[in-house]
Length: 103
Image 1 (cartoon, rainbow, N blue to C red):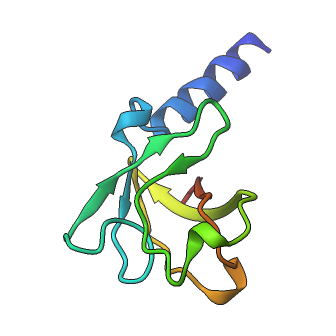
Image 2: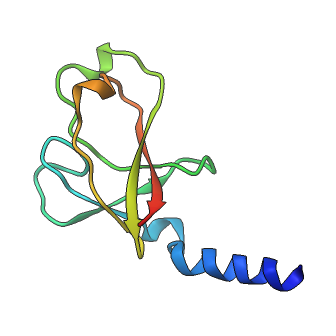
Image 3: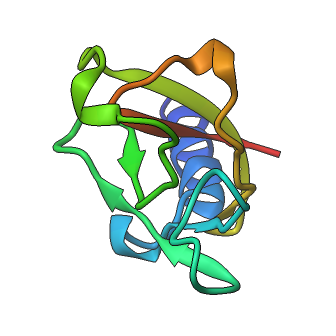
């Protein structure tokens, strides 16, 4: 049993970023990342909730919209995550986070 737990921990460590500051997300027009740059964007962990946040393009007037949080699942590999585009089904809001999912 102890060997199984050790193998599981080693497997998770191999797929997880070295630390939260190492997690990056790709910039996508009208979506994740600053819109005036190219390449990946640093993502910041949100407390210890298992979600991250990066600057993003929010169309319309996000501060006048609902403020409950929403989470986007994104595929990640080696500390770099695919980006996402903002779609109407996400709704407006200031608190759009992403959760990494292994590729």
